Length: 363
Image (cartoon, helix red, strand yellow):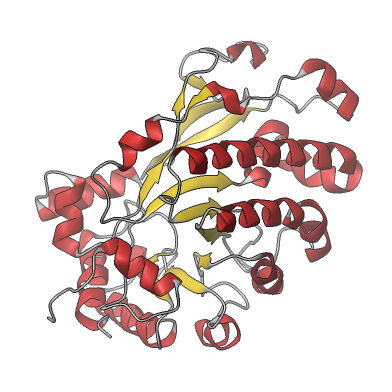
């Protein structure tokens, strides 16, 4: 192998500035169960040894320390028993096992019963950006200079579904659009101010800002482009402009078949498109690279639905090489799984992905 000439941060920034790095950067997303299984397989004692072993270019994610009200469980009516965690929005979460892994699922939605903005204003207290100690971010990045630093920006549709419940949230866009507008704008306002204060605390240190929204299903968008343009893109554009004003690149995550809305997202200013689920309708890699490769960086594209979970080592290797040749042609690609690696994925497949990326990703 050629000698590495760049640090992970330098590698990422080269790609983001549409320059060729020494090799394709490689990122890591996985569930705790999958990570534990992989570390045991490789006999790695910690995450750093895992990253070193597989030549991964990890991202350091920062968030301020919480100093707000210690308990928002007053939003839970009636009490839901032990094991329920309440977030700063008053949403209740409980760990749900799916046999091969467990996730914190939202089981209580504090705004589900309201039908008007007036009711919400009378009965609900929104969280405050003042509930955080932003100085904690300084310690989180200390000594991490060789890695790209990322902060969470916004994903209001995801949180809105926690507040209202999935089914009600989707119906709101038609039945109660004033409620949807009000709540989504309040979430954007909260995210904007928290993110602004992070930038203010560590000026020039945040390389990436996560501005996300899950718009796609396997076959198509879950919302019409008209609804996305009305309810989401104005707030996302505000977040994106804030990130760019602070010298940060925008990492946009949206699962599924989102081809129809990609031009709008590029116009709003996204820099990275993740996760590139190329098995979804309209998301073939060749046309994405042809139509958008000069405008965005592609991140992900290693298929979790079949290849990593159920494919052979040979299929994994072929997909890595295809991704590098298609999405990584002339730069503009960061190799990663197209979502969190699940524990059903054989460690041999995960190792094959990163080893093949390292062997074939040099420019």
